[in-house]
Amino acid sequence: MKTTKSDIESVLWRACDSFRGKIDSSRYKDYILSMLFVKYLSDVCTETKEKYKNQYAGDEQRVKRAMSREPFVLDEDSTFDYLYTNRNDSEIGQKINIALNKIEDHNGGKLRNVFRAIDFNSQVDFGEKKEKNATLKNLLDDFHTLDLSPSVLESNDIIGDAYEYMIANFASDAGKKGGEFFTPSQVSKLVATLVEPKENDRIYDPTCGSGGLLLKAYHQANTKKVAIYGQEKNMQTWALCSMNMFLHGIDDAKIWQGDTLSNPQNLEDDKLMKYQVVVANPPFSLDKWDSGFLPDATDDNKKPKMSADLDIYHRFDWGVPPSSKGDYAFVLHMLNSLDSDNGRMAVVLPHGVLFRGASEGKIRKQIVEFNLLDAVIGLPANLFYGTSIPACVLVFKKKRNRKDVLFIDASGDGNFEKGKNQNILRDSDIKTIVSAYKAYETVEKYSYVASFDEIKENEYNLNIPRYVDTFEEEEMIDIDDVRINIANIEKELKEVQAQMDTYLKVLGL
Image 1 (cartoon, rainbow, N blue to C red):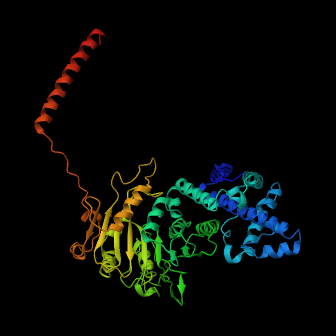
Image 2: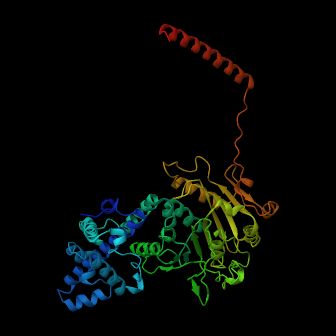
Image 3: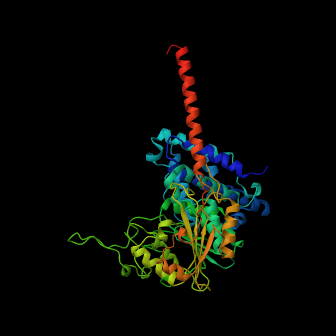
């Protein structure tokens, strides 16, 4: 009997029930997804070991030698089965922690530190020992019936897809915090499609969250011959991303942990590594983005200020973004990480980047004058978890063969599906946007190809309504008809009032 995606999702939701009302979902997601990860690793190892036992007629030495050559290894006391057998142990929380540490130690090249930010023995999260042990026993019971052996999985991607599904649901539940680790799947699909990843490309996301956007770009390339790179500041989210990559069969992805701006890890020969494809949905208008650069306050308590010379990689030579809005700090980092011959980049940003002035205006001018901006695409409002503001996608290219810029307004009614809590980009909407981008032509009330001179005349303001006219003329109102309608309504009101007076008299009121 095959294990389906719905089977896995059912177990995951049952596991959620073990936590609901006890721990906030933004925290218990880490416990559930970590246990799913351990169960998968355990079932793969168990099935592989049985295969070798049959192959080598039970020769333990040969089996052990063969297992040591597998992509990952588990000790007997770090398997899910061992944990389940000990589910009634009074120190089960500590036993799980030890098992996770062993998994890291034995698979350091691929899984180093992925469990560092999680503690199954946490009194803060689980409460006193009795309550904690009951919750962990329920969690182990929830996963016990789930068979994740490769031979019974319905498809190769089923684990990773279920994992993504849960991350999306946690993002929805977590509201604003959810948006910090997950980009809606359809937005990721649009961004990945626009940059057209292909064989031998290096693909990079400097604010990768749980990795959904990188995975969409990976699948869009339709080949395993691409290299995946990312960086994530939040330790727990970094761990989610690392596990997510592993579960999707990308165990050679390089996902760094740390602040991309003040401590970029994508280095090669002491310079920023270059990529053919860059995709990102950085945190909107990040406040204090420059704090990692600033020196300590001086004796006179003068507040330190960010300057271009504080960055050894010279990313801000075109201008230093305001401390309260980090959007262009991320854009400049990405542009400086883009391959000079064939670099393509698509990034999701708030609309403010299109028209805000001061240093942002100067940076925007440089980007346009150096002919890096290829398209500006306006998206519908309320697509993202935790914010209803509309966003846009900016597409950049190195060595463009034209000077004009395409503007697309995909924000209007009919260009998305209205949801109860969130709007959704449908596949047909994505197809329309991508087709318009590839056609690169003016379409009435949808897209406009603006010349460099037009943009210059607009003082490098890229606000979409300046270029795409979506104004709908209202039908002329006949004043005489309106007067007649008002007169008829007033006449009907008098008749109703007279009738009401008659009824009141009959009732003696």
